[in-house]
Length: 116
Image 1 (cartoon, rainbow, N blue to C red):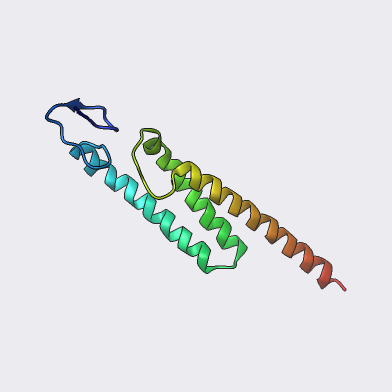
Image 2: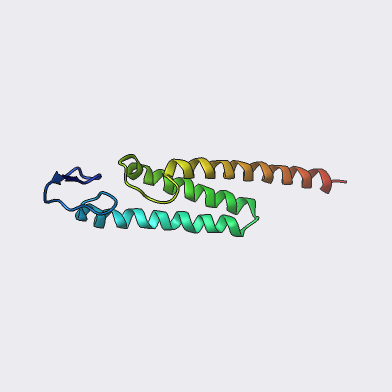
């Protein structure tokens, strides 16, 4: 018997999508989930294209924010992307922290080298 992962409706005649949602929930959630996944993908590409620490931090914050917004779907067992929201949050929190450290080290180096 099919059961929707989001709304919980179930029954022998309920049709669900390949991700376990009834057709109504699938349609409704696409407008919430897909833009967030797209924002994550855009930010991920942005990180790969820049060496600017501030931009890397901003892209990481975008990924972390949207991943947190997707957690409610992940928690219901709805598959979202290649990496789960917890994996994305962990990965990009580490990348953001590393960018902060490198930015601070660069600033210290400029401060120490610029005054001589």
